[in-house]
Length: 426
Image 1: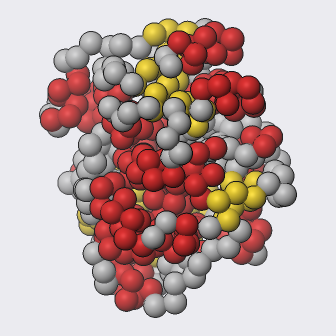
Image 2: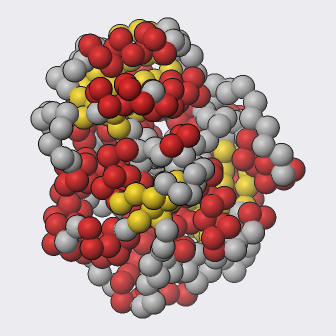
C-alpha cells in the first residue's frame, strides 16, 4: 500500500511508514494512492464482522502484511459488536459504544495499537494525541501497559465530561494525561507544533493516535460494512447515513467505505454549533469561528483535521461536495431530540441525537435512514440525566473509573511547556 501526502504529493510512504509517522511534511495527511473496489458486495456482507473486516483491511494494506497477520490484528482489535437497533419505521441507530471505553474510538484505537506493534522497528515510541473526549480513553486503554510506548494525551481542561475524563485520566503507568488551559483546537495546534519540530520527533519517536493516523481511519471503514450487513438488500440500496461530526474522521471513513463499493446513497454531515463545514458547503468559504462549548463536547471542533481527506476523496472519485447533506444543531434542539428518541423507547446522548435530528429533517419516504451513536449515554450522564430528569445507571467500566483518582497534570497552552513534559515522560 502506497500513500501520498495530500499537501506535498511527492512524499510517498508505505502503510508502515504512515502508521509510524502519523503526519507527513508540512502537517500533510496521508491518503491512499489507490483504492481497491469490491465487486461482490453481497458475498462480502454475508461474512461475519471479523472475517469481512480482515479482507477489507488486507485489501487496503496490500502485500505489506500477510493476510493471516491482518486477520489476527483484526481479531484482537474487534472483540465487541457494532449492532444496529430499529428506532422507528425505516430508521436505525448504529451502536458503536460496546467496546471497553464505550465509544466508537475503540475500533480505531485498538486497531492502531495492533498496527503499530506490527510495523514497529523496536525503538521507543511516544504517542501524542489530542482529545475532545472519547479518543483519549480509547487510545489510553488500547496502549495501556505496552512496552516501549509512552502515551501523552492532551485535552481541554474543564471542557470534557467528568466521566470521560475519569475513564482515561486514572490509568497511570505509560499513560500520561495533560489538561490544557484552552479548547480542543488549542490542544490540536500543540500536537501539530510537536510534529513540525523535526528534532523533537526524532528524539522521542513521536507518533499520533488521532484520526489523522491512517490505521485508525481504516478500521472505522469496517463498521459501515457491518451496519449494511444487518439490513436487507432493498434497504441497503436506498441507504442514507447521518454522521455526528467533529474532527470528521468518521465521515471520511464512511465515504471511503462507499469508494470501496458499499452502496450508500448519500451521507449527512451533522454538527453542533461549531458549524464550519455546513457553512462551507453552503457558501464555499472556509471561515472557522472560535470554538463554542456545547453539550456535545466531542464535536466541539472548529478546524476539523480530516476535512482535507474528504475533499481529496471527492476529487479523486469526482463526487461533488454538494452531494453531502449537512446540518447544524443547537443544544436546545439536541436536547429535544434526546427526548424524542426516549419517547420512542431509545436512550441516546447529544451526539447521536444530533445525527438523528438532521437525518429526520432530510430523509425521504422511500429511503432507509441510519444514524451513528458514537458513545454510551452514561458517558454524558450529567447532561442526559438533566434532559430526561433521570438517573442513568453507570455501566461497569465507568463505575470502576468514576471512583478512581485523577492523575492528570495541568499545563498552560504553551509549546515549550509541552516539550518539557514530552521529554520528562521518557
